[in-house]
Length: 249
Image (cartoon, rainbow, N blue to C red; front, top):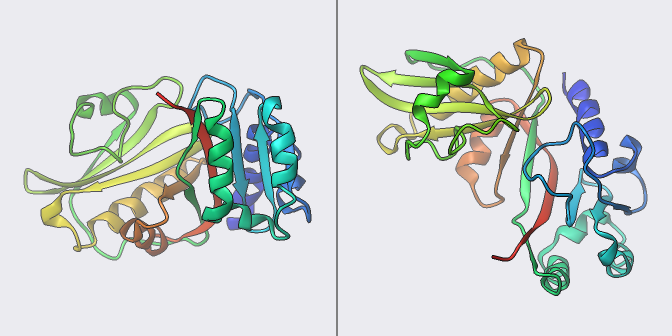
């Protein structure tokens, strides 16, 4: 299972970083010119100004041509490519991006399933699919499980809610960020945390996505250890780290 997902990940990242799938396990850091290739994750309609990813060995960067001279020097500053993600190195990128009116995004720590898991507890649940999810948009209880509104470029596909009687305990949802790629998010109500609700719902939706033939994936920030533990408990493992640039408002 994991190898199949990893192969698909290399194909996806090759689309997004405008390179070959083999580039992500090269001995050298790699720099490419960014492009809007079909099949990418659609977080922005614009061509990436800067994007950087590592699977733990080398680093691959895609960027606008105006950054080429700076980045050619940057990728040579360390021997182990993953060290380009260390804070002192990222600071130099941040300064360069600022010259063009951009700023560095937080690093996203991303997970893929590495083993099958089954829920260790059981709560009553209801499932919602596609436009059935619309009724929950605007509900401030679910900032992570679903998008703020319906986004046709990366629609929410599945949501599953656990109930305590009529009370919602938590929701897990997934958005189709690229064709066949379902990113999972989870929200648990404060009074139901530390009761296994998050792991239960994430496991359910991860298994449902896999049964439908898509790739479940999960992302979080480096210091969010509650989220990290949920991912690990549900059979995910950390696989890649990435960051990018956004315009300064």
